[in-house]
Length: 157
Image 1 (cartoon, rainbow, N blue to C red):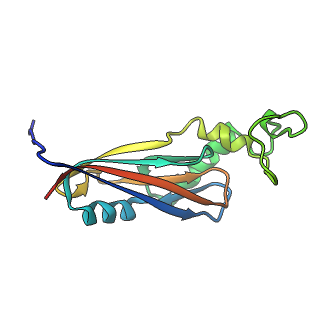
Image 2: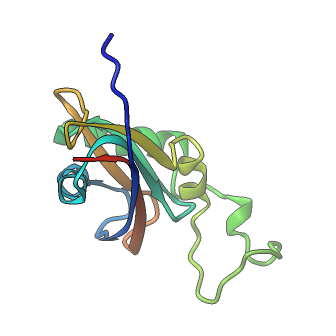
């Protein structure tokens, strides 16, 4: 086991804007995150990626189109979009209502099953990911404009 010692800690914070086009969409953030890390000058540290929405998720998985379609199918099977959700009954719901709100109980139920953030190691100024690993933002209630925050903490070059 290799032991690395950090000396001076630095933080970098950024927001990534994401515009989705479909009701359920997986957006690969890996290249943007790699660029953020590379531009930061941090060689050893941690990158936390966090969604700012309750009907979205952030996760690590493989970027293979048929697998992404399988994920969407699985989420539809677990929490179908066109099933009755109490959250969508605006005649009875009394909290957290917004003007023009669309029914999205299914998206909240799907989000419950997925992480809202991931924490990734940074080694030698790069994200430490496995061969097939990619970092995804999942919009479960699109299309919408969304945001993800990234916080990078570590030792500079």
